[in-house]
Picture 1 (tube, rainbow, N blue to C red):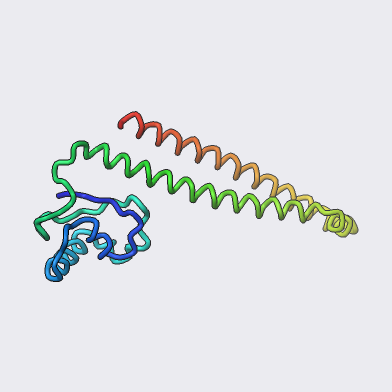
Picture 2: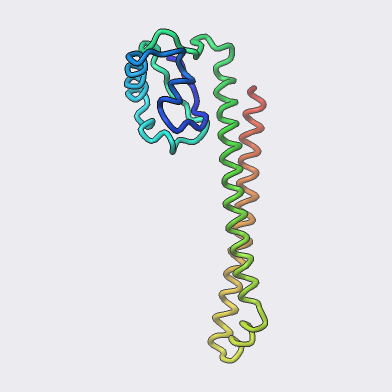
Length: 165
């Protein structure tokens, strides 16, 4: 059975257009049903990440664009995985950057002269403030270590994929 990968399609019909040559309405309906049966997750196609592997039922419509005898099927899948991994890393890094920016703003706010002067009025507030700033700094260190580990793992995975290509 041939396979294709998603490329950001927002409908099953868009995926059908990529998988099959000029379909009649009857062929399109048959192909849609076969594709949905083989890939139930297509019910929420807009939530599938780019690079999701989709089975293309070969009996649904005889003229598929997808070649049954790909020159390098493993290479094609590895390229798709690499693309999906790259997209995932980019999104994850953007989320990390947003989180770190918010954390930095919180740390800066907690260390403003006005805040420090206010909390220094009582020992309890001073202690609470000190622990809060220490916790935020520890969180920042933990986040940075996790980001470094994430980047290392992504780099190792991509290097392994490139060796196999």
